[in-house]
Image (cartoon, rainbow, N blue to C red; front, side, top):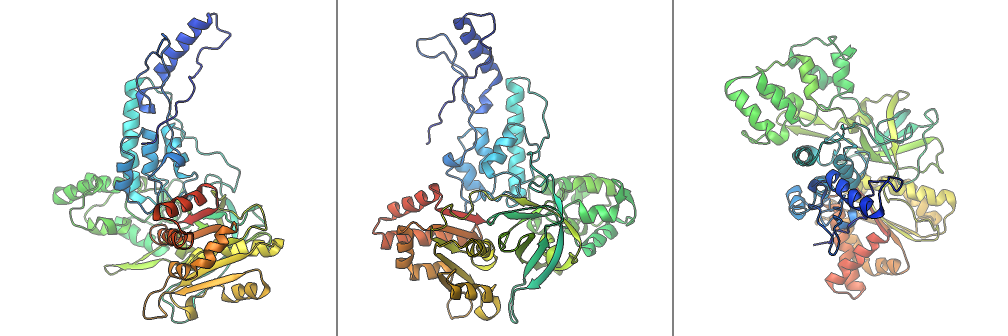
Length: 535
């Protein structure tokens, strides 16, 4: 177990107070103990050996350095078990999705600390964590509130959100003009991937290679109209100074149904429907379909429930922005920004479901219209400061997005460092994104090496991690020469498999034991030479 380092005692009584040094020290310790309760990670104050002055308990906040659960591939119950004996702030962090994606406006540790310190009241900001994270955060927030209430009167809670400049945080988005879209897949592809461009010049937004773009989408009007029909309401009914149709389109999430909606359904239902709704609100799954219930599916499941539209809207979560890795460099295309997006569509039962933001950008946004958006600065995901440093980039599928930006940046600045890109997808003929650009960069020398992996072109599936092992000796040589490694893509599988490949390469070509190879990769991360942008 990692030992917690105590912070220096908090000075509560100022030096100008009319007390002797001994009186002031004793009184400071007494008052500090009263306002720093056990819930803050410390124990009841005790007198220090050889002294009558009570020791001040330490406030233990969440930290990436002391978080063995900080692994996006780890299940929530495993993370909570690892954090089980920790104070509340680290346990709040363990409930997060561990991706440090920035979508909440923080990284995971900072979001946990903001909740713990009551600087943030919203418990539903961890989009990758979904409902299970929100439920766990509610449980921990209740524990925090009870601990503080039992210890001492708490100051009034604040709903202040992280301060930031306009266009640089989710609280203060600006308008970016949607320019165009073009499909990146060829004929025969099973995917639907789009290159999307924005004009930032009128909004005054700027960004750096490695940053992400937060987009506030709008819901599909077809879905909105189906929900209004199920409610038996009028499209033009006024709510919040707008029509019901506009509120449902722009302001609330129509995706995964929140527990509060099930609670509302239980209030307007009776008998078995009421019992089922209550069970769903408490996290149970009486019919085995809880995971597939979005807002419309709930109304279809409980067809006799007709909540008032105002209560219905209040029971829904706010429509959250979605973050996408930027696939362009401002040095290559001043005033413009591009994204690389997979349009998400799938069928449950007989209903087609849509990814709200991906299909908004791939289908519904019209060229010339203004979209609310902001730039999310990267959390430890940027090109090395020294332009001579070689870089290795692993980004299959849409994970290539930030590396297109990196390569554009290195080309525009004339950086002399070598660049090696690993890219893969299903089929070379239909899924080789930005092929002409990448081959031109390779021909010009900007892209030193391009290693490709196609999972559906052969009899056996072949992935980027397989290609990495195949060229492991060369990869090890690049690492020995100081290369920085960047990984972008799926957090649950690809990123984990790529890290395992690096461990294998370090063990085989670095002549290390498995334990030493794991430690080597861990040191790359600590030194900033191994950075990941995962989702």
